[in-house]
Each structure stands twice: as C-alpha cells, then as structure tokens.
Amino acid sequence: MCAVFEIGTSLREARSRRQIGLPQAEQATKIRAKYLRALEDERFDELPSETYVKGFLRTYADYLGLDGQLYVDEFNSRFVSGEDHEPRVRRSAARPPRRNRRAETTIVLVALGLIAVLTIVVITAFKGGGNDKTPPVAKTSGSHASPPAPLLEVTALRGSTHLTVHTTSASGSIKFDGTVQQGDPPKGIRGSKLWVAISTPENVRIRVRGTLVHVPGRQPRVIIVTPTGWRPA
Image 1 (cartoon, rainbow, N blue to C red):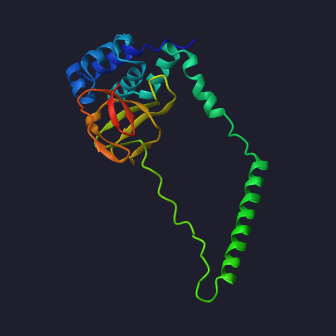
Image 2: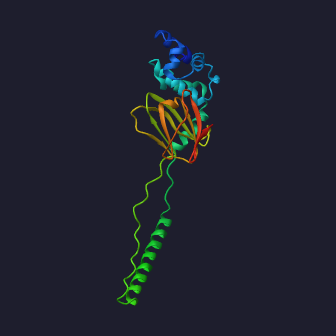
Image 3: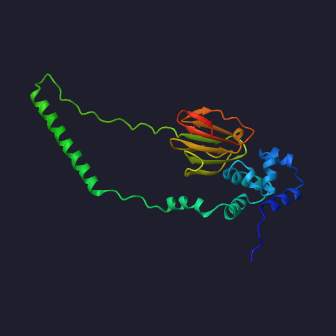
C-alpha cells in the first residue's frame, strides 16, 4: 500500500527544514500568512475558493522546492469530486461536427450563378453604353481586416503569477488554468465575459481589448472582464 500523502504536514516540514518563517514566506510568495497556515493545517475551507487553494498550493510548494503540480493533483484526488472534471473531459474528447456537403454545394452553385449574372450585366453595359462610357468595373474586396484583440491579455513583468480564467463565472468552463512567468509571450484569452483569478496582480500587465488597465496588487484578486473593462467579482 502507498503511504498517505499529507499535504499540510509535508508543507510545514519543508518550511521547517529550510528554516523559513511564515512572514518570510508571505513576503516571497505574496500569499497572506493566514492562508499559508491554512494550507499547512489543511483548513482549505478558509481560503476564498477552490481556485485559490490550487493556485496557492502550487505557488507555495514550488517556493519550498517541492513539486507544485503534485500537490494540486493530490488536492484534486482527495477533495475535488470527479464530477468537477467531467465537463472538461467531454469537451476535449468531443469530435468536431461534420460539415454539411450538400449546403456547401448549394453555396458554390449560387456563387457561380451570381458571377455569371454579373458578367452578363457588365458585357451588356459595355455594348450599350457607346464609346464615351467605360464598362463598370466589379469591385474587388480588399484585404481582410485584422482580427480584434483578445478580450484579455496578460503579460508577466516579474516572477510567476498563477492565473485561472473561466467563462462568465467561477462555475463556467475553464479557459486557462496555469502560471505565467516573466519572459513568456503575452497570454491572450478570447471571450465575451471572463471570470479571472489572479494570485499576484502586481506582477503582471493586463490589457482589455488591447487597452491597458490597472488592477490593484499586493493581494489576490478575482475580477470580471467584459469588452467595456473590468470590475471586482
């Protein structure tokens, strides 16, 4: 049998081995000492949400020289029901819908018919207009407009920041759940409304629809982002 993996005890022992006090850990991780103590005591219900538990576990474990992802996986296996992960599996396994070939054929035939009609109109106008008039020239479409900027763009300015993004609300589907680090390319996330949890806002630059916005830092933030800006969740 495998030994029970005690999340809180192993975190506390790792901190003790490194002779790190909670104030020092708080300053280094930007996570409040009371939350670090709650992780070590496995009092996860004292944290704002399950998303914060995962982000703080990963950040704190990595800071102590441990495998942060291992602690997140252990938390999921012990405290998160399988139903929470089922929607993501179904989405990833879903097959793309088949294209309707009959509809495509109809569209092609209609386009060819329009081209033929336009050609006849141009030729008729050219023949009946005399020498003083030049035939109308069909307008050609210009280059496609560049796609709009993503709704949310996050760039790490220093250190690492854990970022969790859901559609619409905390119970919406997950758009992103990971860490952005200094030197990484900007992380762009599209959508019409996003629920965003940021562990260290002071470490990142945030743009909404390409416009730079300021989210106060020094503590974790949960915000709602829409095309008009952001607001606290």
